[in-house]
Amino acid sequence: MFWQQEMETLDRPALDALQLKRLRETVRRLERVPFYRGKFLETGLKPEEINSAADLRRLPFTTAADLRENYPDGLLAVSRDEVLRLHTSSGTTGKPKALFFSRRDVDTAAELIARAFCMTGVTRRDVFQNMMTYGLFTGGLVMHYGAEKVGCMVIPAGPGTSERQLLLMQDFGTTVIHITPSYAFYFADFLEKKGIDPRRDLALRKAFVGAEPYTEETKRKIEAALGIDVYNSYGLTEMNGPGVAFDCEGKCGMHVWEDNFVLEIVNPATGAPVGDGEPGELVLTSINREAMPLLRYRTRDLTSIIPGPCACGRTHRRIHRITGRSDDMLIVRGVNIFPQQIERVLMSIPQVGRNYLILLEGLDEMTVKVELSPSGFDGQVGHLTELQNEVVEKLRAELSVRPKVELVASGSLPVTEGKAKRVIDKRSL
Amino acid sequence: MNTVKLVAVFAENRPGQMARITGVLARANINIRCIIVASSGTCGVMKVLVNDPDLACQSLKHEGFAATLTDVIAVEMPDKPGALHSVAQCLANHNINLCNTSGFAANNRAILVLEVEDPAQAGEVLKKHGLHVLTQEETLTI
Image (cartoon, rainbow over all chains, first blue to last red; front, side):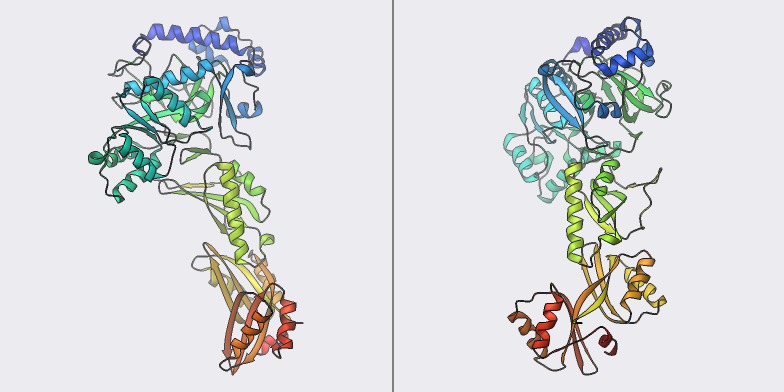
């Protein structure tokens, strides 16, 4: 089923022409943004000189650092009173990355989600329970608005409180959920302990699973545990949030909406384009955003293009599930975490050292080991507990995820310099 | 001097930690007279009454341990029923709160090693009650 059949199945030459047209318009729009104006001057490139997506490569990349340096609104391409919504995403420093949406952007994002819902067989008769965090995180509202556009009954449950999630599912007949893979496992486990058989006792049919990478194996386990179809969902705040790429009913790769995004796969070290179907870093250019379009944004997500047509008939190309990152960002419980954030918090607490080790286990358990500074020790075990709690709370405030913290002896952790391994990831997602 | 120094050392709450610490002390020829271990979750503190607290503390620090000296009261009482109760009652009457505390009896002597908020004051109170509060040197004779 198609939400926008003509656009979703547009023949390749027409789609390429549309991309080019929108790319030129975006470049023209971005001449108003001092940051991009500078880039165009540097390269001497003018909008009318862009005659193919290949010409895009003459422009420099936009990185997370650029967003950081231009925070809060240095990359805004419209006036402030045209901005309808702000969403943010964690950055490596204390400041998040700010993403602005105009009224049209909010609606476009919802349209892309509606396409995704439709192509996985969801209709207005479905009951959609959004079990992702609302607030500044795009997984909440962006998915919500898309679901409303389709006409589903939308339950803005947010995450956690499994008892209440179950109650909502039982009382309102939830058929579709949006959830992280780690929470999907927890919830399946919770149902089993309660003696609930989802196939018999609940109306669940489908789950859109995303916000953190997971394997095919994990997908099959979730499907088996909950008796549903799982569809992979990919997005990033810088490109609206969820809805950048989505599995169709074939579950054979995620279609990237090429009328909205120009898709490139590059070698993360050199920035050069990789061969057809080769793995590399996903670079996206938003060509249908008004408030804050981005050119050649380095997502740091590693994937590859799946060549060839899809049985569903859509002409927008597919990418594989994300296999990893080309930077040191972690995703825990759907939240982006940079090790540098942890380092900064520790530096603000004199009784602990700067060195740390992040241990990730199970589905989403995070333990941060920190060294006790000899000078921070006064002989009282009660104070050690207080110190540990202080570190937990400060990390939670910075990361939006509560880790466990263990104090360890000074000098027992690898030194945080160069490419020392600071993360041990033993998760089974 | 009413108070006695204990050496307090930080250790992770996992096997082998006491052995690491006692290894350092053994190599420095330190004799341990009393030991109190307090653990909480993943970490703990080991406190020892030794014959040379300054040397012990230095040796541990030299080996990278977080170590420090803490002041406690070591009070002696008769080794018979009711003796500890008498001490406890005395402390209660003066509203003195005990933190980490340990006690032992040997050679017909009974010693209580207590951590309190104001060790000097507690020492005075116990002395007035007629009890013998040990000095650092006297702890070597137990």
